[in-house]
Structure formats: structure tokens, C-alpha cells
Image 1 (spheres, helix red, strand yellow):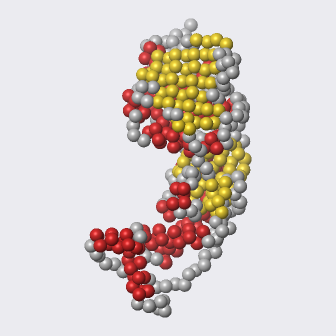
Image 2 (cartoon, helix red, strand yellow):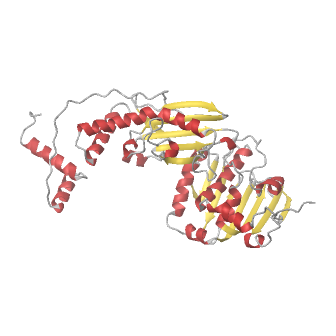
Image 3 (cartoon, helix red, strand yellow):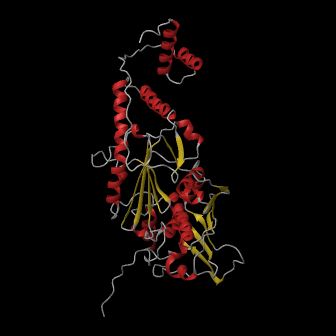
Length: 449
């Protein structure tokens, strides 16, 4: 009989490799994704809660999204990789590693408790103790019985203590909690706004962010739809013609660049990298530049076969080697190209027409916003918006050409700042322009163009 060569990894190497390339933040989102996927797989239609709390001593998450069945817990949950790819559901979990690497990333003592309405199960993991025996990779259930719900919703509860040092530091770091809340609101906004799942972090109920489109008859959003390899693709692009102050008043959070949703979960927010086509070659899009700040693009990918989605293991970018990626990228660039070209042309016109300074460019953009406000500006949701199949640039009404020149002079800063206050302007450029107009009007020179 042949002797066997051991191929088992050490547990330490296994955990190090598993957790090295994921951040703690992305690990938390993996746990949230598991709750969302459970909601979808169980076919739940009423509103359910997912609650998170943390400090420098513990991290816990509890969801009421269906629970984990005993058979699934014993045979699948702690296996690495998906066992059955035949399950048809619009989930986001693809690789079957999220739960494991997330809890190992955060801490060393883990309690998992779940009740799906049929069985109650409890599992405790002492990671340091488990790592001592290199031969035994299994984990015995700590407790199990028939369901103990008594009318409560099926749930899954995870409590992690003996936190790793990086988790302790992060959980008390300034702005981490607010950042986690903000991103959770954005990533799961479609579930929140549909009143499917309510997310609560450290006792705060999170609002969803609305997606709205502001348009005129000249600036209607573009929509492209198709089905490719069992994935429904929807590409929506438009030019945001609202000004900054108006955006602050709205709860909208759609960033410039591309925003990519896969099975309703936001995967990429405001991406302007080569991954979304900003490559600088004609067959794609130009390299990103602030002149394209008005561009908005949203991708919705939906499928009952989530393993086909072009998503990486951290679910924060494309898997650029997936079958669908190049096809999708080509379509994105085709839909976006007319809008991007229009913004390029507008910038070039402003450069030819005005002095090449930041102030004049900003002024030109604001004039464009003001002009559109006078053309029956409408605000709409994505479902109610009026779309066109391709963007056609509006006709440009050329203004009479006026030969312009630059006036430059230096004055004491305190005096200039005082004039700014009196004129209620923000820039030195505005001070020069307003004082020139003041002199012009005072001298009665209106008849001279």
C-alpha cells in the first residue's frame, strides 16, 4: 500500500492566508451580506432587522433573516468554498469564505447561536485552542435542541471577544463608527428603501440614500438593457446639473463616476479607475479628470446564479478575469462615451472663450447650471425618469464673441478680504470683476460693449 504524503496546511498558515487580504471593515460587510443573503434565500417579504454593536472588548451581530438550519451548519457553513452551486437566488455570496475569514479576522473567541424555527444550535470556537491540534479540523456543536423561538423571528447571532489588536484599535478609532454607518446606508440602500431590511449599528437606525436624477429636455438620462449569460444588465448614465448646495440638501449619495450594484448590493461607489473604463484609450474612456465631475453612471447586475457575477472576493471591485467583465466594460464605455465627449467639448469651449483660470472654469460650469434651471428642471427617481437610448448633445447657442483680456494687480490682503465681505463674494477673481463693474456702472459706460 502506498504511503501518503501530507497535503494539509498548518492552521496558522491557513488563517493568515485567509484573512490577510481583507480589511476588518470588509469583513463586517461580509457578515452583513450573509444576513442579506439569508433574507433572500428564505423568501422573506416582511421587514427584518440586522443589529451590530461593538467596542474595544467585543463585536456582535444579530440578524432576524431566517437563521441557519442544523444540517447546513454541520455540513456547509464552516466548509471553505460553496458545495452546491445549483441554488437559484439573487444573493451576493459567491465564494463561501466570507463568514469564516471575517470572524477569524476580528477576534479569537467566537460564539455562534442560531435558530431557524426547526433547530436551535450553539457553537463556541476558541481559535487558540483549535489551532493546537493540527490533525483535527472539526468543531463539535456546543449545544443543540429543537427550536426555542416561541413565536420570535428566526435569527443568527455572532459574538466575538478576545479581539485582535487591530480590531480593538479600529473599533475605538475616530470616525470608524460614523464611516461604517455611512457606508452601510449606501451599500444596502436598495434594501433599506424597499423596507426589506432595517440596519442598526450601535443602536442607531440607518437611513437609506435615495437615487434621484435631475434633468431637462436637453439632458435626459440614458438607459441600456440586455441579458448576457443569464445576467440582467442595466446601465444608466446622466449628467448631474445640480449645484453643490442643492446636493447637500438632498439625501442622495450617487458619486461621480461609476456606481455598480450586484443583486441590489452596492459593490463599487464612485469609481473612476481603469477598472470601470477610465483608461485613456479611444475604445474605452479617457483617463479621469475633474472636467468629468458631472458624469453619473449606475450599473445594475441581477442574476439567480451569483457565481457568474464579475465580483472579487472582497466584494468591493470587479473580478476583471470573469467571463462577463470585458463584455460589460465595452457596453459601459459605449453608453457613456457621448456624455463624456460632450463634457470634454464643453471644457474646450470654455478654455477658448475665457481666461484659463480655475475661477473662470468654475464660473462657466455654474453658468451652465443656471441656464438649465431656467429650462424646466425636473427631479425624478430612477423608476420614474424619462430615458433616451443615446445621449445627443444639445445645440449650443454661441454667444457673441467678445475679445477679452486679463487684469492683474496686487493689494493688501486685509483690504481685499474686507472688500470680499462687503461684496459678499468668495474669490479674488470675483473682487476684481465686481469692482470693475462697479466703476463701469458708476461712469455710465453701459453703451460701450
